[in-house]
Figure 1 (cartoon, rainbow, N blue to C red):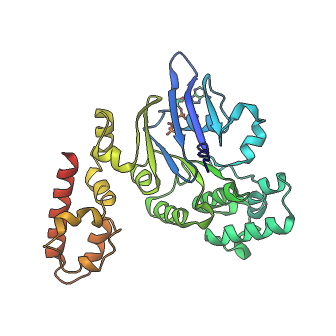
Figure 2: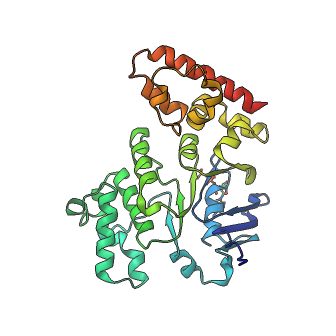
Figure 3: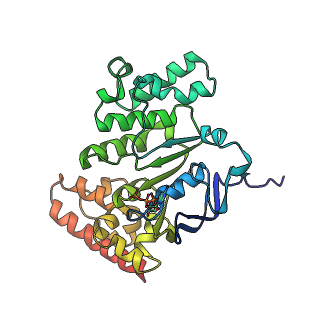
Length: 315
Ligand SMILES: Nc1ncnc2c1ncn2[C@@H]1O[C@H](COP(=O)(O)OP(=O)(O)OP(=O)(O)O)[C@@H](O)[C@H]1O
């Protein structure tokens, strides 16, 4: 039986916004299938936040359209549209006189969810985000650290189980260690599985860890839209190449998998490598190899295969 493919979760066409003579977002189009994570990446002031806010109509475009699950975003009242999209703003934006639990419950209450269901969901989310409710539910935002406030912001965005989640620098203003920890929790959060996510960051490592696809912007224009691997291995222009130059090797190590090195590892499989999962990245393999006997020899063979793979990819 023929059946039509569902529309993408988000479709943006020709989005443009001006605050002065020059557009800060300039003719941006993309389609994001349901369940994918798109990261908006680029230098400060390149228009990431403005683009994100046009998706939930916190900013109205000067030109272009947004469709959410096939529906023109302008046809719905903005408030209604926003309730269907979780949103974490850059400055967290918790209500200062509401407890942690009440902050998390804001949207489900607006939507008229049953109090018992709201309480259960709040409890579950806080627990998962390492904020044990017995200790944290009754606290006020100023009684939390910056990282804890960001976790509450994330719980609030997910509380009503929206199919789309928009996140603006959700791990910003944290030191790198805390940031990496929150990011790990975030990636593994069951509440996020299957959701369509648009995330703004200027952190290249973060983008590579979280994105299915990355949109790299400069001065409001899309420089390249593709998988992390495409941006890294097939940069569309000099801007893209330069943007990743400083971190190229570490990004390549994180991006290539052992499975992809197989043609070059054959016949010379270093000791210990066979025990590693084929899905592991070269970076993960190197970390695990460090603890094995003959680690140096194994790492050498692995790096050789890695360079061959990169060379072949670039051909
Ligand atoms: N309401 C506004 N009025 C005037 N100019 C604005 C407004 N909002 C944003 N801009 C300007 O538009 C440009 C893009 O801003 P935007 O916040 O979208 O960039 P960004 O890439 O998210 O930056 P950052 O990474 O620093 O948060 C900047 O030059 C900014 O100064």
